[in-house]
Length: 577
Image: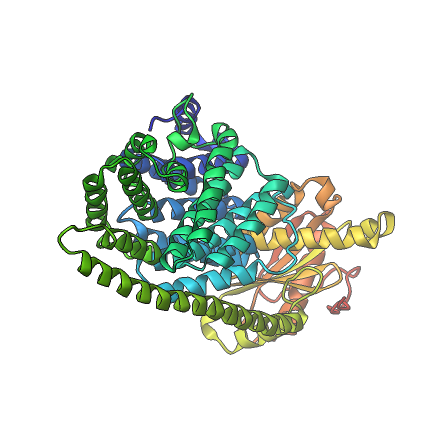
């Protein structure tokens, strides 16, 4: 399937200088590569994956948490959809989970669990896939607050993508009723904020789910219900054409979506099998495209039924037999594999009618038992959801005791506990300790409002966390003061890192920072020094930064004491809020 001209132009543009391009361009290009990589020939997949890796390298260099998270997600997805490369997705998904936890990006964290579920299914580990789906669903159950740094529309798109990825795992597991509910949630988000591509992607994935559901219903004799699913899928295949023509999907201009997208062609054929679908199905199932196993099976069943309708039973048997051999080693689609085996077992054999009847009767009993097992799996999923909810409630109570409710950062109690533990851990040395005070914060409260002041504190807290390492502890000590512990960092390196934070806050839009800047004092903890002593010295350093005009870092080495008579004689901890 050829690439569109604008895709080729974008690829050539990407080769110029990534450093000159915006964060929005990186994310948009990654989304485009993800689509192309999942719906192209092997050579194009390799090219798009290599380009996505270059974008990821640039995102790591920039260090923007949300951009990096989306690039990690893209690169992991491209590997999951490439035969033989799934294992390479493991370190990317591990990094994505760690990154999302650190920066409290719950939507991306949920998507990481969903992608881990897909990886588990590729290994045939259904139980682990179910656990990953449950973990992802629990993360998205709360009343999520849109990420202001992303913007409402971009955040809604991320949420819809995560829900769709969860729905795909549940579809592969055969838990269709819950998958349908998750897809409905995704539909609501896409309807609010999605563009043509998001709408087309959602409709295509819903079509896949309905076809798998219909084939599953057939196996337990629910033919009318199955026909209803096939009919709905066919209607979606027609309705998707409008947004699909404006989407990012690679396509041949002037041809309908159902003539180019395998799953859409199969939906039309399964709703009304006939010879008129054969040419389209044969074209979209070209072995050179290396279709996913799910689509390979669905198309084979649809094509076989169309051959039968056209009076060509031998070809129907052939395509089912060849497909069974092609997917014999793949264990990622347990439900659809059984549908394929059933379709082949039901083929008429003139010389063994009695045998065929016996096989079909046995298959029916087997399928009834499997249907019961699937119902049990739904109950198991709900039980695990309940367990995950209880775990999250427990962690929330623990977190509340050790975290500041306004900013979400560790509070004074957590900082004191960390300092005490550091005193008992010689390996934690060197340790740099910084006291951060906000310049101009009082004016925000006095001239605007305390609500505006609270929002500024949240913005500063998020910027501190985003610009420092995962190992650094950023805590709110009270009022407009924060304390940062930088374990394993010498004083000079700590000063450099904190200067980056000062500059990041200074560059914030005035609508977010309200003109507030940072005065930071940093010291290196001395041997046998107590927590209160090191905080007193960092307070001295902070006052030095204030005297110099603020918006900077002051580093004091050794056991510097107060020398300015205008400074307080001793450090007094602020009242906690």
